[in-house]
Length: 281
Image (cartoon, rainbow, N blue to C red):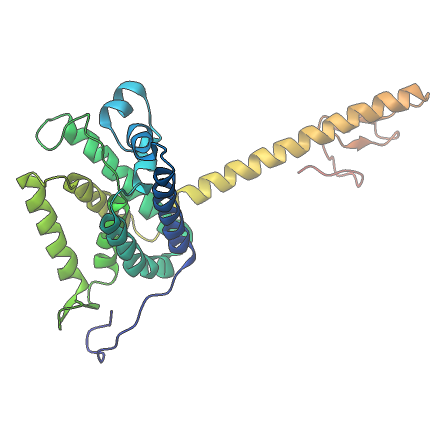
């Protein structure tokens, strides 16, 4: 990849942290299934039934984990290889530009959005059927592709093994047109509807602009709120135990509702009250 006007150079993208983890997880699952089958275990059948995306299982039986687990399954080498190459080549640039959290949001929003799109279209019986399983990371990868085409629109991609370069925005545009054409034509055994779903949800995520990560803020606030509530509960519990202990030794001590010690000369104090003996978290 190069910026327009720069001399042509050949370089490989780095292995950023989130991309490396996704590559490792997908590869480990691919190899594990293959190894289990070598020992005669029905790993493929189990994965298709319980972990692939089967719309009727999600809608009728509530197997919502399939909205995510399907994206880690690859039964064919070239399917796995193609998705991992796309994840690495384009995902590393997105993660470097956005950071790990926003990149992961984009990826999983694309994967889940692709699953939702696949389910919705399957019940129309026009593009797919509700009992047809879908596997692969293409939804997340296509979300990355559309984000790359928008963020690095003017950058040029060398089309190996072809001896020419093309701007990222045109490259992604061609992919969209080809995917749409194959989806309308039936697409064989390739889930082109999932590709389109990944493109759509990836585009929607990029359109929201450079805002903080969706999950990070909410989870952080919830985590610290729960942590502080737990510490306050422990402090109140310890205060009650200490009161009981001191009464057993003929001494009377008091703590307020926050577990802060109330000095004997200040029996009516509530909360921290400006005293120096306690603190409220």
